[in-house]
Length: 392
Length: 215
Image (cartoon, rainbow over all chains, first blue to last red; front, side, top):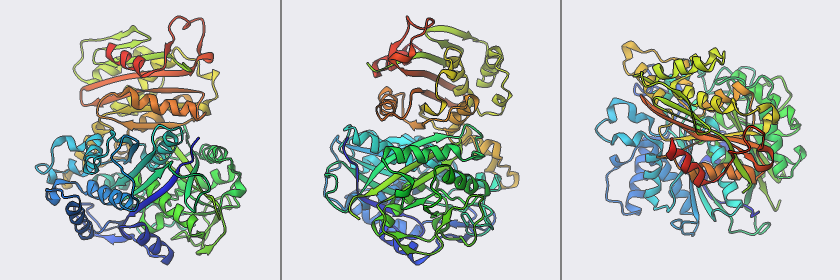
C-alpha cells in the first residue's frame, strides 16, 4: 500500500485565514471566542468564534480576480467563500495539476448552506443551492476539479471521516492525490438548536476543566492536500498512519457511558498504524467541554491504555466548528507534530474528569513521531486518525 | 467476486419489497406518516422508540428491519458490522421543521427532539442502537443514487479489513417523496444458509444499479 502524505494545508477560523496565522495564535494563547451580539444569529449575546466578514470578502475578491471569474461577491454563499479561500490557499502552495481525474475532491460539512433557509437570501440563490451536492459542485467547479465531489455528512466526525476516506482511497491506488476540505458556518439554525439542548456555555468553553459547563460554537474551514507521490522516509513531511470509526449504539444525542467504543476506535487506528500507546506523542481529542463528552473521552483514553499521552483540545481557542472541526484540528495537530510542540489546552485549569488524563496545561517542546486526533458526535459516532512523522 | 449481497429491501410510496418479493402494499395513503405507521405496526417489532424518530430515520429503520428479519446478527461480531448509507437531500426534511420553529421571534420554539434529527447520520445511530451494532459507519451525499459511491466506500472497508459484514443503501426522503434501497453485504464464504442459498447476488455496481432500477 502506498504511503499517504500531507502535501499542504490551510485553516480559516476567527484566528486567521492561514495555517501559519492560526498556529501563531495557538502558540501565543489567543482566544478567538468573543461575546457576540448579532440578531441574525441569536436574540441575546453569546460567546461565539466567527470568521471576520470583512477579511473574508476582501480575500474572496482577490481570489475572484486571481481566477479571472467575472462574477460579483454575491454569487457565492458565505460557506462557499470560506471553502474556496481555504482550498485556494492549500493548492496554491504546491505546483501539482489538480484538474486531472487522478485528483479526488472530498468535502465534509454538517449543514452546508443552511443559512439559505432564512428568508433574507430567498432571491439571491436558486433553491437547489441548499443541497449539499450543489454546494460541493459549486466549490469543485470553481477550481475545475475533474471528479464529482465525495461528500461526507456524518455529524461532528465528518472532517476526520473525510481524511480517512481519502487516505483509504489513495493508499489502495484509486487516486493519486486528494483535496480534502471541510467547512461549516454559524447560523441561527445551528445556534438555536444547540441552545435548545442547553449545551452552550455562557463563557468561552473549558475542555476537561472541573468548571466546564458547555461548548462554544465556532465557524471555519480547513483543507489538506494528500498525495501518494512521495517515497516513504524521504523528507520531513507528515503522513496518515491509520484511522477508524465506531458507533456507541447507546443514544442519538448523548455519548457512551463507558467510552469503550471511542476506545476501540483509538485501538483500531493504532493497530492499523502498527503503533502502541507509548508511541502516541499527544492526543488532540474532541474536547467540546460538555460535561458528558469530556468525561466519556477520558474513559476512552483509559480504555485504550493512553493515559500517559498528553491530551489537548483546540475548542477553547476557536470553538466547535462542527463539520470543519476534524479538518481544522487535524491540520493544527499535524503542525504541532512537525514543530515538536505540545500546545496548551485553552480554558483548562484543574482536571474535571474521572480518569487521570494528562491535559496539557502549558506549551512544551517534545520529541515525538506521532499524534492521534479524535472526534465524537450526535448519532453515537466516533472517529480516530493517526498522523506520523518519519524523521524526528 | 469476494462479497455478495445476501439480503436486500426496498421501499417506495405504496410498496415495500424484500429479496425481490412484495412485502407490503398500501395504496390508500396520502402522507408518509399514513403509510409508515400501519406498516410499522404490521411488522410487530414492539419498539416504541420508533415513534420518536423523524420521517427519514423511520424510513431507514424500517428498510433495515426488513433485512434483519432475514439475517441473524448474533452470528457476527457487532464491532465488525459496518453501516454505510447515502442520500440526496441529507436531513432537509427535518431541517425545514426546525427552521419553521425559529422563523418567528415572537413564536420561537426550537426543540432538541427536532434539532437532533437535522443530521442524516442519526438514522445510522438509530439502527445501531436497535441492534447494538458498533462498527464503522458513514453517511455520504450524492445528487442521485450512485452505485459507485456506495460500492467504493464499502469495498474499501472490506479491503482494509475494517468490517466483517456491512449494511449499505440509499435512504432519501423529502416531504412526501421517499425511497429506500438497503442491502446486506457479506464475504462469499460466510453468507450461504439453507434459506438464501439460491439468491445470493454478486456485490457489484451492476447489481446495485439493477436492484435500484427494479424498485
